[in-house]
Length: 406
Image 1: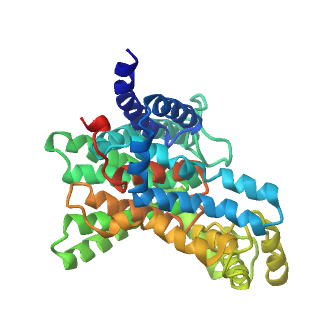
Image 2: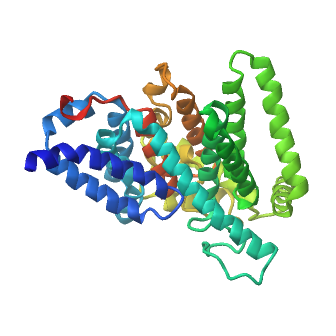
Image 3: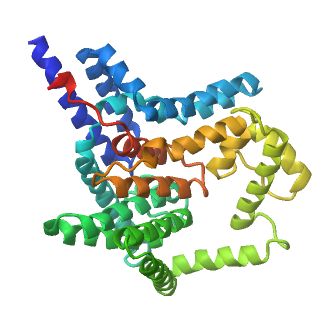
């Protein structure tokens, strides 16, 4: 009986792992519960020596662990230990990645994508309802939506997290439309269009920029043997999408106009949204140049940034993070952390094409996370770090043997 249950444990763990993808656009609390169940199943299953052999042979295991443990290492030279420990907790999914690497199977990639898109479709239904209730039929009951900003229409997370997740979902749906099975392409095409529409009124400019980058990737993948045509088509599609969104959506137009106006008047105004971002970047670069080797430590960014801020931009608001993952890692952990971050975002598994149907998606994933991290500390935030870790272990983790040698 015990033997039979242990043989069943890998299948149960795999089913739980696939289910995690559904919660990426929602609250992550269920993910921790399901992960705890996966851990119990893995402990019950045993085979610890075999599992360690699998993990130590996977470069992604070492990279993700290095990315996590560089944070507690930096606590050795940080003064605000409490802030450092709080920051450490934000990278928890990288600590959990060995369990995901052991459970994930390359052949389950299709199921993982399908479950993720199902979760997105549900979130989009609620988001569209919220938009209609806010702008067309205000007499409808208030829908499920976050209460961070008045313009947010996303049901579970604010636009800062929701829009990049939408961008990745839009890419996957469009990819399935172009390259998937003929019988299901229409459904994926409709989901891709719905996702594009949701992106326009989501309010997340970072997610919109990420989607434009992924759209270009998609065009080049579709016309891989005709790069000149791909360049023209991607430029035309991006321009057309921007034009249609600008003309047809007041919210998108106001956000874009605001960004342009803020950049044009950056020398004459303070504390504008775009101006603040540029100020954060400039001061963070100054902070990095002061501590290039090991950074200021995971807990001291806020205090050290405030010091630099007082010297160079005293009339502006200060910040607790630079809203750029690259600068955040460089300022807190220095060049060593920066090198580990680059390996995390662009791991060796990407460098060698594996000749399977997932090569395109691997490129898409690293473009997604690499561009996203230009606009926010997305590996520091729960939903987007969960998205990256889960898809990375499926797409970039080393293929594993069938449990028990079967």
